[in-house]
Amino acid sequence: MNFSSDNVTPICPEILAAIAAESDRAALPYGADGQSQMLDSAFSELFGTDVCVVPVATGTAANLIGLSGLVSPFGGVVCHHHAHINKTESTGVAFYGGGAKLLGIDGPSAKLEAATLDQFLASHSPNGMHSVDPECVAITQTTEFGTLYSVDEVHAIGGVCQKHKMRLFMDGARFANAVAALDCHPADITWKAGVDVLSFGATKNGALAVDAIILFDPELRRHTEKSRKRGGHLFSKHRYLAAQLLAYLKDDLWLRNARHANNAAKALQQSLEALGAKAAFPPEGNELFIHMNDDLAGSLRDAGIVFRPWASIGPDAYRFVCAWNSPIDLISDLPKAISG
Image: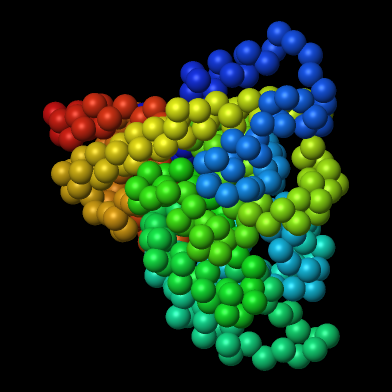
């Protein structure tokens, strides 16, 4: 079993079928096809408000292009210092933002806290042309440590952003896992809480290669589309991205896949703790961060279990990521297989 990432999984059947269905006919390029033209209405229905959808093939592109419309080349993006955009996306924010800077702050389990954010923004002392002034706040749902912002926490952060006239961006590479775990309407943790732009992940949850930039402010569309083109992320055959997203939404496939992955993570926590491991954080989504000794880690590897060390939490820490197709029965039988 491979728990190194949810990116290692195959394409789920429904999305593979949708891609195949687009392969027996011609269609207009660059998003002018019929499938792409359906995206705005499909996602508007999902979120319960009018949205604009800009599909791209990677989560990195969704984050960086989506953020580029919320910050000037001279401005700053406030995020947790463990944020994916800060730790794992090179200098992409500066590249797409024309020089925009990330301003990292701390918080428990990779989460920004509204009070800390408010204090940080209130204590900022502008120094004219010499300083980088915060213009945007970015949060990750679920976080880099697999934890969740509750509905109230997102609303509190949104309130701080409104108070300080900041835009709010949400990195939603695992947004489906968050909605499934919180059992809330997707609107409750996005536009109703003040989120301006969401990167809506699909690649990690069963798609081939597609994430969507969801714009809750339609005036951002022109900038976002131009940024996508300049950055080389406008596909000529965009219908294959759109087909994946439409299949992802159909019959709540996105939530069904996410619920399975979340349940697999809970089962994995129980199995690993039965073997003597200890969770660093409660597995609220599909990621599990575990402390365990070398002997147990070696036994798991000998049994063919694939996972990754996670030094930012500790020398004995590891990350396991469950996915839409993780075999829950085998996960539950893991203690017997290892100790057997």
